[in-house]
Length: 168
Image (cartoon, rainbow, N blue to C red):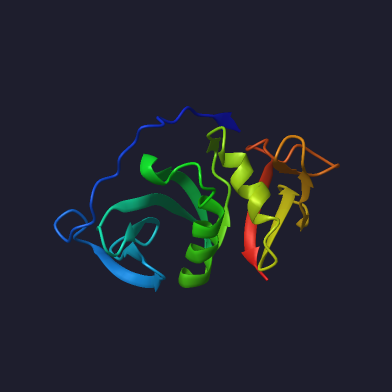
């Protein structure tokens, strides 16, 4: 699995119908709104926005892997909201609202593996790992590396393994 560099000063702008014309409000939680691309069937963009300021808090790009499993291609958190550890909660909210499971993408930023590690700690979510062609097993959590792991194989070898978060 490749590592990528992400700018720390990324501003995602404001949510507006003209900016996301093919999106519909999918869910709300507290002062947040989830807007989801309604046009595409194999690729979706999910926007999380502050309902008051209209600031886009996060943008998550997803690609369909199989019927209810979507791969996280990219998760961008606005710099104003970075450093609070919100990505695992956003992933959980997306899974719950869209009734899907999420698969770790091919490329991970330095904090990307930590998202799956934190997801595995949520009681509502199970993170499963497998080598392609074999059965899924519950991921273990490596506290030192802050990533999920397996004592059987490298979970982040993209060509031969999968990491998937499912709702319990």
